[in-house]
Amino acid sequence: MADTRFKLNTGAEIPALGLGTWQSAAGEVKNAVSDALSLGYRHIDAAYCYGNEDEVGAGLKKAFDSGIKREDVFVTTKLWSTYHSRVEENLDMSLKSLGLDYVDLYLVHWPVAMNPNGNHEKFPKHPDGSRDLVKDWSHIQTWKLMEKLVATGKVKAIGVANYSVRFLQELLPQATIVPAVNQIENHPSLPQQEIVDFCKSKGIHITAYSPLGSTGSPMFTAAPVVEVAKKRSVTPAVVLLSYHIARGSSVLAKSVNPERIKANMELIKLDDTDMKVLNDYSRDLESSGKVVRYVYPAFGVDFGFPDKS
Ligand SMILES: NC(=O)c1ccc[n+]([C@@H]2O[C@H](COP(=O)([O-])OP(=O)(O)OC[C@H]3O[C@@H](n4cnc5c(N)ncnc54)[C@H](OP(=O)(O)O)[C@@H]3O)[C@@H](O)[C@H]2O)c1
Image (tube, rainbow, N blue to C red; front, side, top):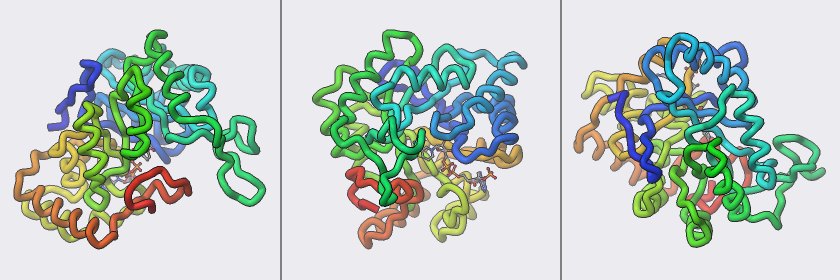
């Protein structure tokens, strides 16, 4: 199962399981990347904002030096919000750090521009502590600059992250290139069926992030997840990751621990009964308004998702 791939609207294939690198600390992420690639991962998810692309690049180099071919590895990175008017500049910064001359996928990390000349290079704030956003810059202008990258050969595909239906409905009529991917937070406690279905209908592939519930997750002990894990004699992590493959999505699992990096490859094919247990759980959470978002609230902006957490 770990070598499952999904076809993008560009015709390229994205490996179903990717290694996440958010919060992967300096001194750990180089080996995490090279260990993962030597174990058989072929998909690495990075971002300028994570501040560790140089170490991710060192891990890629170590793997390439060991004989793994660049063209066999799918590398994603992301445009940061303070660079929406300087898209190619931010891409070039990422490529330099990663030691690459192209990425397989370049994503708009969040559909909101932040002040490029504010009081912080990545997270500028107003004196009252609120986000320093550029209100007269539209995410559609950003997408137009993203589209220009394709002809440079520095990106094989472009896509978005954290786009709700509302944002995609604004974008798609203006787009020359339909995003290849929408990367969103996704797990049984946040099924996001609306955006998953919408993207499917438009040929936009979903990649699930924070599938394990991110750092300090309570999801490993959620009763329905444990129930399926026991029945299938696997760990809750395997259930949480396999859930996305069953939905036709790729999934990013972050770990810097060699055993967990290896264990996260043990994906299984969840059957209809397994998925019913997880889907019933999701539906109950949704209908009682109790879905859980781990990442979005930290941003503090309304991105148009129905739960508006
Ligand atoms: N586009 C976006 O806005 C966005 C936002 C968030 C994340 N992402 C991407 O998605 C990736 C994954 O999401 P995430 O980092 O938020 O969280 P995650 O992958 O859901 O969870 C990572 C946490 O789970 C632990 N872990 C990993 N495997 C485990 C296992 N088998 N058993 C128990 N614990 C395990 C990790 O610790 P150890 O490292 O110690 O194993 C870490 O604390 C990110 O790294 C990033 O690449 C994208």
